[in-house]
Image 1 (cartoon, rainbow, N blue to C red):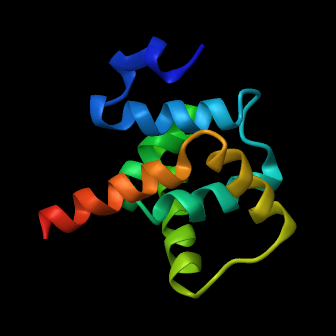
Image 2: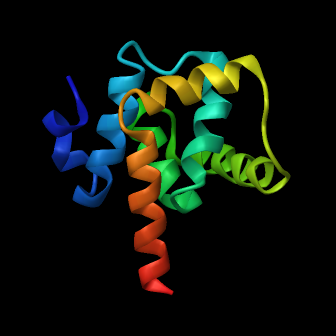
Length: 113
């Protein structure tokens, strides 16, 4: 089941992001990819919306996901993250439209400011 099948549980503007994450990790986000995925996604969305998507995709409590999103934002602000787990997570997301998603997200953020 992908995010589109559960659209009533997620605000419509987050369905595309959830679909990307679910497609990149059809068996769930592996433990070693969890933090890298958060760091990659927080570059294109707020911590609150990231927490919604992660909670939705993983079944974690929103509050746990929000706490994790705050940590990811801090890591993203600290500079480039380089690790094999990060590279694998980035590759999986890129194969499912991450670069386009990020460009679109950043363009929307620029338009709002």
